[in-house]
Length: 235
Image (tube, rainbow, N blue to C red):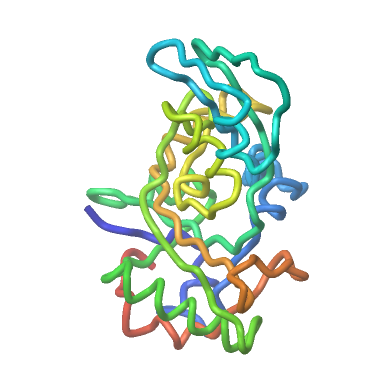
């Protein structure tokens, strides 16, 4: 399968002199462009769902959370026992599609008339991370990853172990950025799954590996950083 970036001819670096735009999760969540807006971007649900009922003491919970719970009783969890819905650290995203044979019909689906093919996803991810570090976050590290987006009826990660559920609130997990609902929460006719998205994600972090707050919702990278990694599709 091919990894394809659909775009207008004006923004195809193999056809025009242009830059590469990356947007934040917050941008895609709140943009007034209804075609690309996804109100669930940047938010993730985590659920503790033990396969069988589980019983924990206050000391068990304290060891997992770092917060003591007094008393000598126990806490019993069963079924979909605990669910949290929280923001994930904001990140820059570059959205592409993974397809067998891209066509003009695919481009039309996104409102575009051109595309280019990414020859090596790892090289593209590394090149963009280098440019983001140079242009946006000098001196910082960039956590960068990429992969196919998984589509679910509900956007959540399910944990069978309570310790894993608690720990998930303190780590940056690529899965949180590579999940989407099958359909838009705003419009049942908008099927995200049809987009077959392949996503590149970039998080600037400080020396303590904590995410750095992003001050720009859109950034533009020099296109020459990827010219050797892409090839023509339709123009």
